[in-house]
Image 1: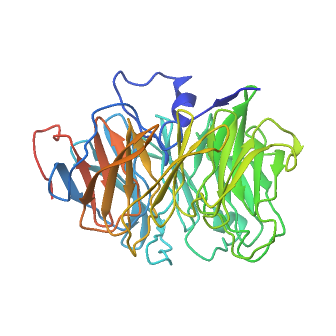
Image 2: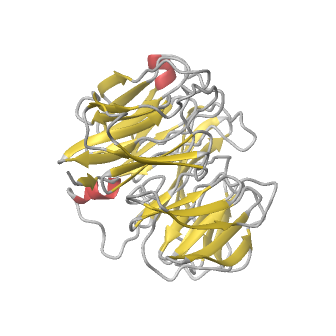
Image 3: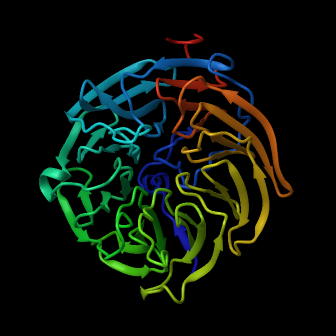
Length: 428
């Protein structure tokens, strides 16, 4: 049975077509949630002050990927001890900011209280914070509703900083909380914030393995939309209509190792979920058309030694591009898992926390020390092209935009490779 991907863009496309020529990045991993942008002439060589159309100082700390819709950029951060949502136009000018409830700041030295990325369907904008606040705005910044999961459903018990981005599925926003307490998925009505369903998602696993920083993914089998969730040593598929589990796949921690939490997310492509697990040492593919316990029947393939712990893979055009935290790149065949090529980025004590991004045939990798590697991917292998120094910490992957890039650093938001709409250069 063939699987149909239902990304945020495709869902809203059923309601209102995209603006002609628009390039959208509506959620953490892009239009198809696979880490790939469109075909264009994207920049190769740049730095913090070369090839920069503009850069703006960010008003607070956050680790979320910006969402882009038409002529607006939306990102979350903390401002003055409060959760915040900020909107910029495509020339880097701030349009508006909204302050929400009290922030819970990041615990990890490279984290924040604003790790989850915004999600939009072109009408609504949903945000989620470590504080437990979930809120929905229209694209002009008018708040439609707000709630707090900690206040409604109990404390969120995670060793580090909550990271799962919200998911828009048709008329609802879905949020997952997989933690040391009672784990669950919850769906809110996009218009009103009413809880449409709340479904337990609980397994008995070793210490810390119950905690997942991965984000839920949206797909459909036979026209039935499902939410795919990775965490607690299991991959599960849930009915979008009511949250009920359709299938479950275990076996992702056969020796019951402690601390096998999930950070990298599953990626949906064709009829498979690509699953990184085991703290970066394993990768598996699971078919999505099952029911019940599919552990023994629906694993298409598994690999050891070619996984990723923090960066989520790119999946595009029948290829999987896997970035290990230490800078090893691997390209695998989607259907078979066969290794097509391996490459190594220059050695460094700094890790790669940002997920890689594919734009055309260029693969972008952001390393923690502020280096952005650019290489061309071909069937025969990886061709390194440039090492670009941005001058500040990077934990967020670039966003392809109109033949240019948006790069969020710890201190600035950069637009690379395009002149600002008003003709200006660097905006400080």
